[in-house]
Length: 180
Image (cartoon, rainbow, N blue to C red; front, side):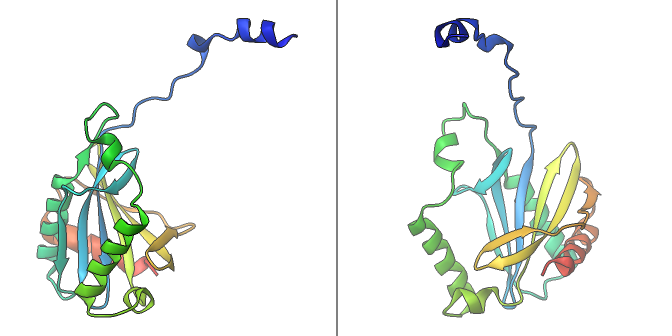
């Protein structure tokens, strides 16, 4: 078949369309030796740093009740941004090198350490995703300074959106304990 015939027979209307992302909310919980960071994220399929979100720096010995309260607040502050949202292109992107460096500096200052290696030594990370009234708590495996990957064979913890703060905090701590 000639290229011309192939182009004429091409009908974009028969190609499957990607369904829009399901509305969801997301937050990250990173436990360092010196503090716990709970931060909301902007979502549309994936989650990204949201300059209008919340970013809590909590003592490592915070109670389960307070941890659950801050995690609920972070999920409430998370924004689901559709592609037609005026801030979509500005927010739904990876941080630039300078932005990432500034964020890393904020974490280093909060921990009172000088290097990312020292900051991330012994750290733990989970993501919280709220979708269809269910919160999924997923543990992550540490790769290197600020980068995490999934843990093969480990099922996430799920709790109802209506979970109490203390039970939510306990579930987050259980997931953090599986992060390494």
